[in-house]
Length: 194
Image 1 (cartoon, rainbow, N blue to C red):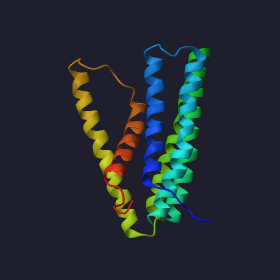
Image 2: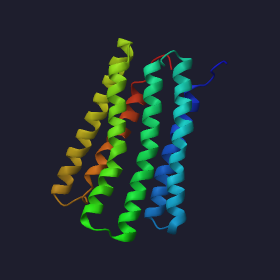
Image 3: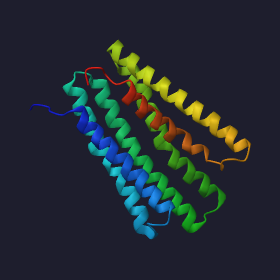
Image 4: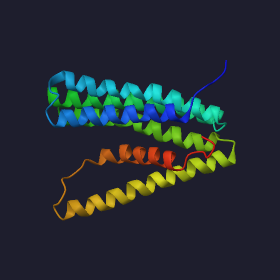
């Protein structure tokens, strides 16, 4: 079977994912979308992760930048990402609907955090399992850019918050912001042949 793809198709899926998730979130926050259908539509937008990831893998294979470790990482990260979305929204819904006692809320919070640990484990295993030194160095570089992105954004926002210019943001947002930084790093520092 011949693998065909283009980086443009992978970028199109990434743009569709970002537009769908942030677009539905914005419409929900603006009260244009309301009720359970707004949440269902927002959650459904996360299913775009699947074609986005597959097309990205195909594009890497076409330009010779894919490796068995990258394929395993992608599978692990995809499963953890979809689990995160499902468990986070389920836990939040249960907590808001039933107002459970403290111990149950602690357990719900821990359950929602487990997939994030799975994503971090997937990244650690990628660096451990990647045999190609060049690809491993690129993954490390992209991770460092994402970390710098998060640290700069958190510091700037922290000062805005300290001076009562910006509202408080929950700490769980750190990992999604880091992941956005990783996506930006992968676009900016992508494989030259891709």
